[in-house]
Length: 206
Image: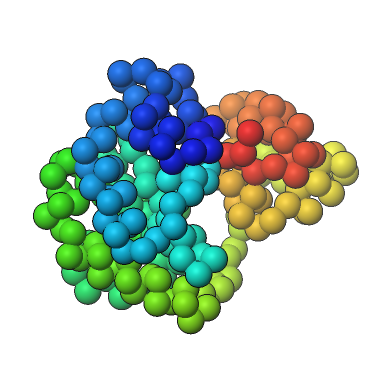
């Protein structure tokens, strides 16, 4: 994965085989991404790279992250549950996202049109970072697929490793297995996932 922001804007995140090719999503949305980069830097945020993407920080806190996809590009806010979102522009990134947390764009000129709003949201997020505020923790109920429960019951080593995972990593495996349509596929995914679970990793980690 890319570890340098400049490399991201030049070649992409490095997470797929389109990296450093004309087909990379970063190339498609580069003008809009560069506008978002400028806005973040002018707001006083420090630029780094995390998870292969440009990440912008303030007061030791991750504030937002840039991302490019085939159909859109996004500015994703960390701790988005704190944001008031008076314009109602924040969207959930997927059905399992708890709070609306991103500004999604399908037009390279859109960030420039929304620049005053983006700046206001960044300032708000930076203010919370200065104050050390975090969203209140919300209880989560983890429902494991039946196949995973049965496998854990039959494999003590795997069960111990799974119990030691963070709640977020446990949830990632539940979602990964549950997204398979058939029981056979769910079982195959569990078997393939065993080494990563034993290594203490989540479904989205390499």
